[in-house]
Image (cartoon, rainbow, N blue to C red; front, side):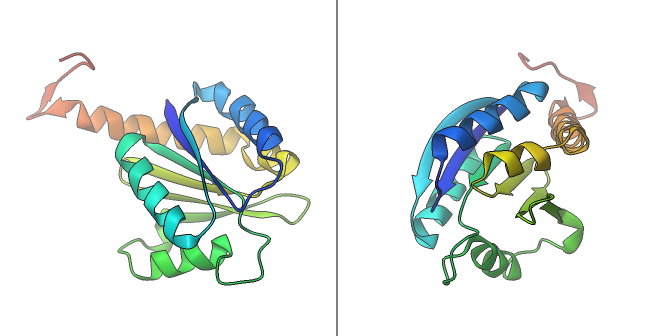
Length: 155
């Protein structure tokens, strides 16, 4: 499964990337594109572009800011104007108190994680990986069925 990684106001990018790669390798995760954003506007542009390319978009960082560019604030503004409901979102947490989010809409998952390798490792639990794999594969199965006829990836 391909994913796009966006670093947003992030530190420890190399360590975070390694932690993410290791965690997602359990479900065949492979980075498609790695980029960065330093403002809510560029983050929005990167996420929009990513959602066109991959079923999974991962944002790392942005939770430590005290300003309007804090990732939780940015996501809150975005989702307040969307059709997503609370059933589409789940808050992630870990022992350190760091926060993260997973948002699913149809065949897309957006995973927002803190810029802490230890928190990333803890948040991406086997249960979360199972959930992501199930949701992404069930949507892909539905997309491969056309007019009630089962199609393969190469059809």
